[in-house]
Length: 506
Image: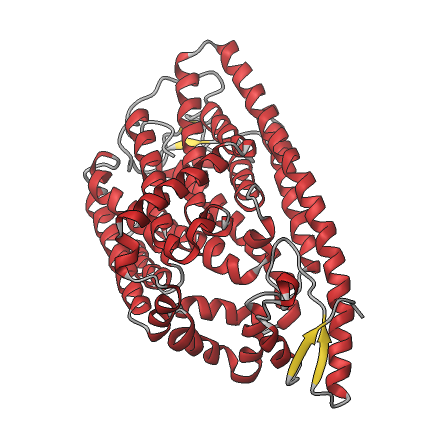
């Protein structure tokens, strides 16, 4: 997302006060009442309001699907018991088991607060990332502009998917595919902030720990991380100065080694072996020509769905505003080489395509043709896609600012601002409809929860259960009662011997 040269002299542009020390991004002071700052803050308020509304809807979340099976284990055996179950029986993802255990420790409340906390985490990481990249690129931005980019990217990443519930509100799926890439991305922050030997040592330690944890958290995010780190090792010398290259190379190697170690722990676990046997997803099935070809067709379908989701244009527009409105700064240490937009853009797009296809390859043996509709599994590389979109917008804005006439720049700013606003507005109606569905399900779930607890208190061994699905989530007795899973887990949660199918909510 480099938006300017890092150690070349750039002619002063209108409004450039780089020689005046003060506050603000990159050491330049932007008056808080300036029109540019006001515009950025007003535009940032739109996705922030959307995220606040999404967080508030989290009060309607109730356990479903796999969570019925996680909650009794955490209640009876603690978080350690769930981690052990994941490693020995389920899938080998011990990092995943730890995060699931943290919210399952507070059964319903943990589910209700999950969306708000995870959305705040995504926003904080992306906001810090934009600010630090600007600092390393020696660019100064108006107040509110990094927040606008981060808030728009967060809202689109979480809410523009075909199934927002599974992306944001279903903790079990979100931990594996939404939070996982964000946690991996957060390992970049210490490296960008490191300015001393101690800071660089801490960044290397963070990369190692994050790599190992990512490897035990999500196979798909591990693939994306290895693709990005491999790209840095291949092309990083063209991106950063000779002085910064040794640290970048060591950091990338450390992170990649951590991911490999964590992945080795996962794939050699009994739980991972059991999962592969259950789905017939051995190494041979993954690299079989038919599977590779089907994965390519599946990824093409996913790409079509993503590229036709017009709200992603809001991220491109936010990046465009960033490129148009930042100015060179004379503070900070030169780290990035002079920007070469075309190779940088091609490298970003190639990383998205390669990581997206490889993620589809490793998930296809489990999901089959449903990989095209299992939208939650896309998020592992969609975060990278969102970041690349913002970077492409910044590169385009930089080119316009340097080469186009001033009135063309003003038109571009107005167009980008309008697109940011329209993109945020376009995400609101689907969120409102989902919130209504969640509210209906929460009311039914609460009535049934009270009924089942009362039955258990009376000493009943068997009680009726009515499926209360939302957003395609799995519930007991679906498909007309032909599929009972996870009925046994529901019975364990309420300390019953069994639950039977009912068609009427108490």
